[in-house]
Length: 186
Image (cartoon, rainbow, N blue to C red):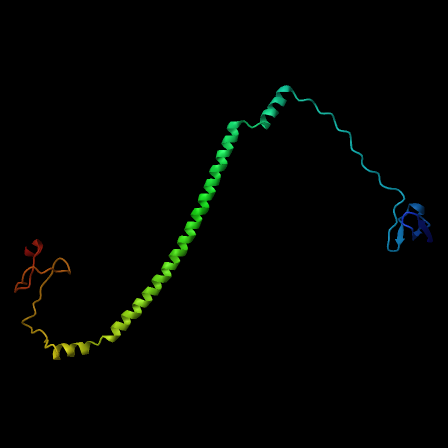
């Protein structure tokens, strides 16, 4: 292999090239150094191909194209109304979503308040129930107020056929039956 140094006028740098003796100048070139020299021949630039002449469109086709590009006033009004309606629908949708979100937050706050009130109510109820001593109430009623238990003669039992609620308009009869249905009389 033979080595040769060449001077390149464009880059003003020297480069070393090695050629293979067997293949001659057509072999690949090795360049040593930190810069690459400019190639001797520049590649051809692609030239624009000449444009093909267009066919002339018929008069009717040109007229149709002009009409397709032209927007008449009715079409513009229609597009404006459609755009406004779309805008109104979008604004209403956003407002509805906002109301739903605010009501959801309000419901959550009310549920928390209800839970707190229930807990407070249960706490107070339990405190009241714990403060009541039934034995003390019985002793006070018997000793201080002079109350006594009812004797067996004073107790009247009765059957209520209709409901658990009774309004007493007159004295309860001695036999204890307030009313009888027609089925039980037979």
